[in-house]
Every structure is written in structure tokens, then in C-alpha cells.
Length: 317
Image (tube, rainbow, N blue to C red; front, side, top):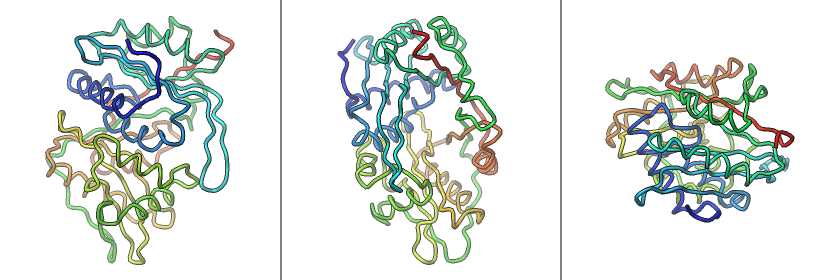
């Protein structure tokens, strides 16, 4: 086991390698925030601003990582509208290879020791009955706030790429890539879609440096007036021939025009040309968040697995 250290680019590549091996063996057991693309996106956009509040630990067998924990501790989030959000609890992203499931107890002990005195949350995989049993044994229970009608749990959706229809954009709109449009346009597209946001030009530079980022698979839809009306990044896991969309967003002034649908279809056709046979995308799964789910179902995605949000309060030890 390694010593406690911040999450580095080298760590990220090791974590992604484990994600690929778990995906190949048991894709239904890949935890939220532990997929190949989600790891790259979260590390890339956040390590410059929030990296000082991150720490990790990795477990190895035969030179390969077989488990890891990435604890995100209290920090302050500054958004582009001037607002500030203080994150007061701890969150754990993690993954354990199913052949080494017993290491989960060590991951939980490490997390508890790292986040002493804090409310601790984690998103376990709902399909992993062994893991849910072990989290319960350590005092973690269902997070009621996350499971309400407008809760924050996510579901993973997937589809194959054997038959992807031709995308159609409204007149005057066109597809671009981040390589073509440039960094300023790529950042503006994200900020417009997700306002208020903590995303910055520095965050985008981090994303570009994350293993797996390709500017030719970072898609935008340009409006006739030059506005970047929609955008998404595809993360190509070549080992598993899977493309993951993360994030997906549309400018509020251009919604309900079919732009995101066309962009996803265009992206899937590009991913197929790049060697992918399957695509995945996550969305909020609670009943109060139907929009993204309907979008993804409308282009052929279907639910594959989902989170089980868990919490252990500071007073529970």
C-alpha cells in the first residue's frame, strides 16, 4: 500500500486501468465516479482548484492496482456568478476489483480514518450485494436526502452502436469539435449550459491533460450567430471499445430544438468510427429529474445499473 498523498496524473492512470479491468470482468460493478471517463473528467476539471482537499490510497497485487479510494474532503467552491458554496462533509470515490472484494473493508477503514469527525457519503453500486453488506457493517446506511423524488443518485445507461441513425440539425446549425473551435469556445459552451458553474479556463486545461481526452471527440453544436449551443465530451476506452459521454449540456436559449439529440447521434457515429462498439452515459435517476433520462432513452440508451447512496454521520463515529 502507498502512503497518503494527493491524487496525481499517475494515480489517475492507475485508477483508470482498474476501471478498464472491472469493466471487462463485471461492468455492472463499476462504481459511480469510477469509470474510465468519469475519473478523467472529475480529476481534470477539479484538480487545480480542489486538489488540495483530495487524498487517495491504492492497493496493489502483483504490481497492478486492485483497489483504490479517493477521499474528497471539505472545501469551498467558487462559481462564475460570484456565489460560494462550502462543502462541509466528505465524499469517497472508490473501486475494488471483484477478485479482491475483501479489500473493501480496508478501503472503508481508510476512509473513516481520513474523514474523522465529518459526515461521510459514498455512492456504492446497487448491484454489489457484498459491498452493500460491508458498508452496512461499518455503520453506513441509506442516505434519505439522496433518495427523494429530486435526489442526487445516478443511473448508468448503455446501448450498442450497431445501428445509429443519421443526426439532423436545424438549418444554420453545424457540428464542431473543440480542436476546431478552440479552448475559449469550449469553456463558454460549458459555462452557458451549466450556469452557475465553477468551470474555468484553467479547469479545461486540466481536462485536456487528463488521460483519454481527445479534442476530436469533444463535440460542440454551433448556432448561426456563432454561439456554442450544445457540447459534450466523449471518453474512448479503447480496451473495452466503449465511449462514455460526460458531460452533456445545452445552452438554455437553445433547448427543445433537438440539438442534444443530434449531437449524441453524431457522437455515437464518430465513436463507432474510432472503434467503439458500445456507448454509456449517466444521468440523475430520481423521478424528479426526467429530462436527461428521456433524452438518452430517445436515442436508444437503456438503464444498465444505478447507485446506492450511503451516509455515515459524524455522530455515528
